[in-house]
Length: 192
Image 1 (cartoon, one colour):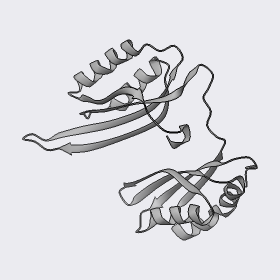
Image 2 (spheres, one colour; image 1 turned 135 degrees about the vertical axis):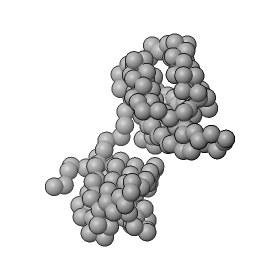
Image 3 (spheres, one colour; image 1 turned 90 degrees about the vertical axis):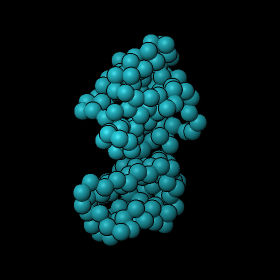
Image 4 (cartoon, one colour; image 1 turned 180 degrees about the vertical axis):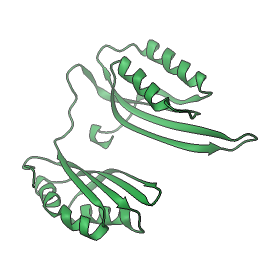
């Protein structure tokens, strides 16, 4: 079923399936051959499975073409393919126009992302982008660290001091450090 994309210039593309050499290239070539530009992509592997995500900008006609022809990508990749046309992101009422972000590194623990996203929610922030990664830290004792990057929108009324106080308490509790404190980040909304 083809969706109405007559005025749409943005889309999201997901591929989920067995990993193979060239999977990311198949998605990138599919977009490029149909006139699209990839604003952001993420590729990850889970056992023998892979997940590829691409945020795309293109003309409305090219978005429509990608939507119609997504089945070709499914046949070539052997993956499940989801193509979702999207309107240009907007700033909701009650939120600041600028995007903000912060980066942290801390000891990994179950529930860590849930705790951080609860803090973000409690302060009325809207998460635009999040990436997280676990890694083994070098040193005399085995330690697993979690690196987290958040890109968010702030409400018009926002308690910077209160947020930093509570964020620092979480970071300290998990033996971490605030790599980059909350600050404006350059870029356009749909890049995140």
